[in-house]
Length: 386
Figure 1: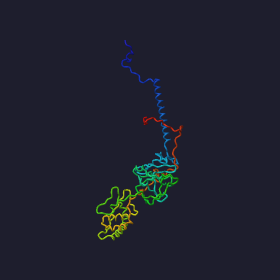
Figure 2 (figure 1 turned 180 degrees about the vertical axis):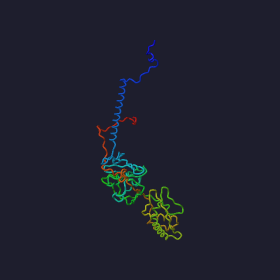
Figure 3 (figure 1 turned 180 degrees about the horizontal axis):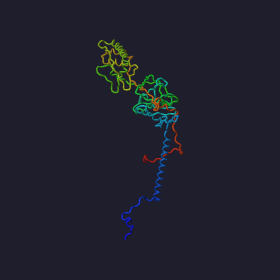
Figure 4 (figure 1 turned 45 degrees about the horizontal axis):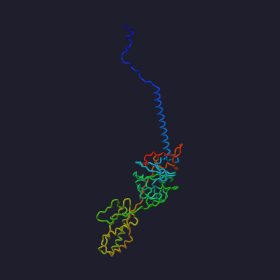
């Protein structure tokens, strides 16, 4: 006979279900503690190392500040006078350019000087074109090859930059080369602001620009001929200069030709000479001093060489031409361009350097417990084997 509660009891058939979870043991707690604490110690050590490295880097960097504490920037390098030089990025134009500016205690400096009319460095300055080695090869120390040529500006492909006289003289203002030629005649240039020169007070000095070199002009086309006569390669026609002196050359030519014809028989007399053209190497221009006499001398001799002049008359002709003897030369002058002040990006009415006041300073190294000179022993790598 079955029990009355038998129908209500669950059957003990089928698989038994296991309980979920895990048992936390002492070993697991110890392992987690070691990992967590070790990670925290490692993070703290990395933090301390990064802080020390940052402080060490800051101690080694030369940061330039002005009298008001404004940071000018970090020194990119140092010039021959140990003055730090900083990169300035000109963002006032559609295309950005960099230039290197030297910082001394009382002024800004640049490799390039600026040229002014008169002798007091006043008015709008002019600047040499980039890579103009031929016009300023000598440096401020008078040594050839150390001239004020900024190859960094040249590598950017234009324009040239230089520091000139500021509104109050020192510390200076920044100017940029423009596409226009200098409005000041070379003969009227009387001073230059050469900020790189080591001098107390204003670095404005008197200067007179002169020709930097001469070469003979190409005169094969001076006497017009039926056949075309062109300038050689790398030469340029100087017709724009020659035209200014053409009336004087023609008058002088007719006078000399008339005197020579008085010595020649009717069949050998010289016909009127038509002046052609003269050519100069690129970047050079005709030397206008004594150009009239030199052009007449060369042209008349060219015509006489093609004529059958009696040898007995040649000494007399030489006497007539003697006062005209000379050579047609081409000369190189300093190529100056007009400038424009570089505007402050925060205030276009001010110069880019006007916001900073002298004296300028550099930061000092961070304080450290050990001030001794630290050396690192060689590892032997890269050394020659005995």
